[in-house]
Amino acid sequence: MTPRGKFITVEGTEGVGKTTNLEYIKSWLQRNKIDFIATREPGGTPLAEQLRDLLLQPRNDETVAENAELLMVFAARAQHLNQVIKPALESGTWVLCDRFTDATYAYQGGGRCMDQATIAILENLVQGDLRPDAVILLDVSVQIGLARARGRGELDRFEQEDVAFFERVRAAYRSRADGNSSYHVVDAGQELDRVQQQLAIVLEQLGKRWLP
Ligand code: Z5A
Image 1 (tube, helix red, strand yellow):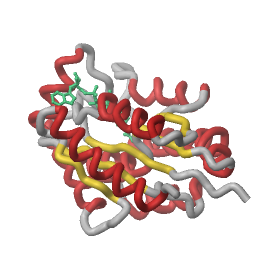
Image 2: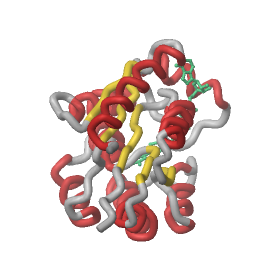
Image 3: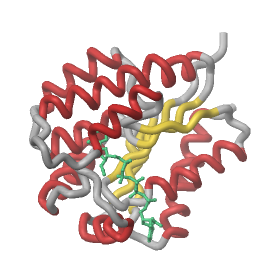
Image 4: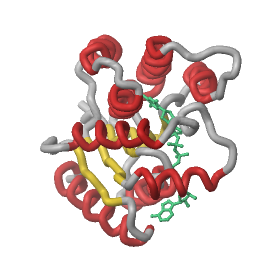
């Protein structure tokens, strides 16, 4: 029987360098000849990408209800899981995902102060017992992260939030990582080559644990 693929997610607040560092992780997977797909949340299928557009688009016509936002995040996730993530893992393919449910605990739970228990109910409903095998949390101060992200031009609906919102997002991420061995926290406030030296150590640990 083919062993299940590994499920790695990459998380962090705005401007933390996910896009840049995902490329580094992909090159490690390629060097190790691991069969993998790279995907993202919200998104990863045509329907889920449409939901992503709706979630990120700034709206002047109405305020998005917090529950509506939460359900859209999980609707996109349900589609992504059923169509992409679960089939890949079951066929032995590894999945590298740019954000997953930790982002919901951080943005909707921390940022929007929504009830964590409600998020957990939806997590169980949509995912069953599927959880990432490893979560790489790129951690940077909100000040540095926002300065990097806001150099990119037009802001999406989340990027328009204030500093206090992102402080809560960061605190929620750090609290989930605290004392949990599936989480690998990387100090992403340093120069890029120093960040990638830390990532290399994390990947080496995962390789030792998972590769033959
Ligand atoms: N969201 C949610 O609310 N609930 C959920 O459950 C999920 C998501 C799954 C879209 O995510 C939004 O969805 C997100 C939360 C919400 N909020 N927002 N916005 P996204 O991941 O697509 O969006 P993003 O957070 O803006 O990520 P990004 O576009 O991938 O950007 P990034 O992580 O900040 O990475 P970057 O583009 O690689 O880096 C930003 C800049 O910094 C860039 O110019 C780099 O060259 C530079 N950089 C990177 N690293 C360094 C270092 N070390 N030094 C100096 N400069 C650096």
